Length: 312
Length: 253
Image 1 (cartoon, rainbow over the protein chains, first blue to last red):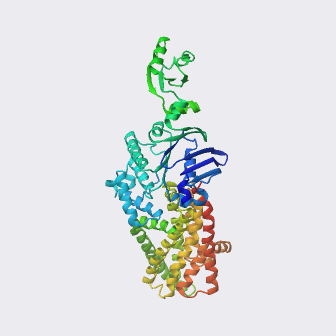
Image 2 (cartoon, rainbow over the protein chains, first blue to last red):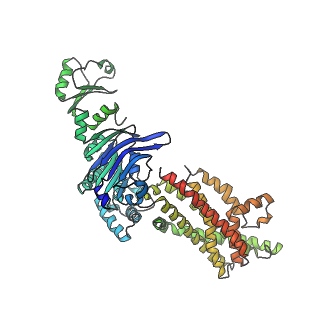
């Protein structure tokens, strides 16, 4: 196991995944370092889940090189999976079992003794704040609770690397924040996280480093701060005009910002000083219905890189 | 690690066992009472049983084989598709140290255990009716379980290819039920029209019925026993050979 300690948890070189004619992942390179939270940000269909499944050793690599803990998933699948925790996009909890039984049974799949499984199950139920629901059927849990149980289940083998595919999709804001908070704690404990998301706030909250994926390729890589600095501006002025006036705006904002982005429902001005830009807009005699100055986000990065919004 | 998959089935079964045991007990009870004793009295009066054997003695072991066929077919349809498709239990299992190979080995082992349960309860009922009265007749339990497996693994392979459960009722209607009624359990295959006899002998059930009947009546010819066992094993093994690539393709995309 010495080689795997020195090796990065995940390393991919020119990684490709094809389903028949469809190219799901088109020659991507990335490396995830031990202890970091690494994100794959991109819209649905960008190739995030396919990448995750390859890392999880449940989807054969079409071509290129992928190592997890320095090992080839094709050869060492079971051994690698023994050190992974997987939170899939759709919960696949065991509906026939209770909350606690779900964890104990899962411990068995990692070859842990029943007594050890029970011990860890109780600790993890407390960690995800489900200890009071231990005896309930899974079906009776809310969406957020199911998600937390799935995360607890993924931790039963005390994984070195936790894979999370869209961890908070479909959750209400409160449930999302609870999940984020628990993931943040895991990160502090030194667990390496790799997650996919199409929420820019999730990526900004959780990820030390991320890649922006679009159309099966990596469009950019860096820390959230680096990416925003490189592909966006410090501030963004968002203007909304009455729908019938919007087409007439084209060209009339030139020179007011580093870059102007005309979206169907609003106009974005990329600038270092939003207030000043707003005043300049006013001086040109334009009267937007609303104007808002905000800081640059990963959403702007994505828009810049792909010309599209993350969530349509 | 396949034993972990068996454990999963055991944990789930613990919650449902009463229902299953009741079915396994009352089905042979009612069938042997109504058909074996009731209908049997007419058969025995009319023609002295079947080939000189009282009808209930003739019927019971055949019905045992037909029962394990039916139970095995069911076990390998809906529950397996649920784990593949509806509840995605296998996806969850394959995110652990378990492999597709463990999943298949575990499920086949579990069906074998279930069929042993079904056959054991059936044997007890048979014994209560005075049909199984020799120590050797206990061998009918593993024989009937093997007959179940001969259906289980090919059906499991079929299930691995299914996107919904539409085909299952068709299989029951056009394969399992006709075999149950015409496959040698209730009357000799030799009474069927010639072409259908050939079809019947090509299926595992005819061999399972003959094997079980021979073991219970104590008139098994060794050479024939070997033939029956070979056919049953061949079906069971062929099913495993097919299910491996099919389930791998299905689960590891």
